[in-house]
Image (cartoon, rainbow, N blue to C red; front, side, top):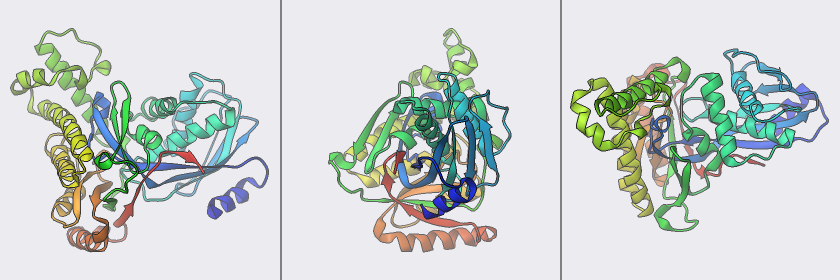
Amino acid sequence: MNTLLSAYRTIFGKGGTLYRLFSPYRICPLGAYVDHQHGLVSGFAFDKGIEFLFSATDNGKVEMCSLSFEGLATFNVQRPVEPRQNNWGDYLRGATQAIQHDHILTKGVKGVVRGSMPIGGLSSSAALLCGFVIALAQSNGLELSDMQIIHYASEAERNYVGLRNGILDQACVVLCKENRLLYLDTEDSHYKLLPFGGGEGEPLPFEIGIFFSGVTRQLTGTDYNLRVNECKTAAWMIQAYENIPLKELENTRLRDVPKHLFSKYESHMPERLAKRARHFYTECDRVTAGIKAWQQGDIDTYGRYIFESCESSIHNYECGSAELIALYDIMRQTEGIYGGRFSGAGFKGACISLVNPDKKEEITRTVSEAYLKRFPQHKELFEAFYCKVCDGVKFI
């Protein structure tokens, strides 16, 4: 807080009511790459994320400074949002534009944000978007539901930033609760917050291990959007085989196609598209099976499904850099790691895992030694973190 306050005072001086907001990062243990096809997902928010310290401006001006990125983001919410400028301020402009579709904004925001971890696969963009949506709502006296916050943040990333993802990331940032697993059906937004083993308020038997490969990435510069199109094309093809009337490709998703129809036509499809569909259907099955293991308190089985999810990500969804695949292989062989997979889109970034808290020191040593032996060039940037499941975005 002192660092943020000092930065705020240095840039903006004194005056105005200050608000402090924490917007957490997230992980998705099961349900990878299926939310854009309206699949089943699960997730946790954890106790690292983006801090906001801000106040409202009466003239509509936005002035936001990041202690993690260069440049002051400036624009005015009383005017139409400018085109993308290809910097971190695009997320703020995108959130503003999304809200402007439904509300007249008169007050802006000035403040400072700071991320508490290196960027890479933990949905820092969703944390930033959700936090800024709430900051704008607070400044303008808007009462937004959780789902409205999720909708505006998701719309900003899809329609302004240009990443065609679903609502998994934003839902985790907003809906998650301490010591609960979020289960979400992204087709109808129905969700549950599930305690481990069916108990109430029991501490979780694991912590979240995060291993940064040392290689950063930006989703809009990867094959992420291509994978989305491949999934939609696979759904379109199955519907065409079955003589089902087609919708526009943009509005077509694999969730529209029952699994038995995929099985019927799988051998007729180009293998590339069959693989994408195969990942979707098997991943949704893993979410369902994983929820059952979670509710039974079976962390070993739950962790095994996470490993299997990553196998499908590699071989069916075909994502993952050499570094992330190496980290995944190392995690599978490391005692004390129940399960692990790529985080985010899997195109560089980080791997996440559920780990035995009593073995963190040994896990760190084993993973870092094995990884840096293969990729010594990443020695200065590779890091291991351990975090705990926490509540979603909130004022502090």
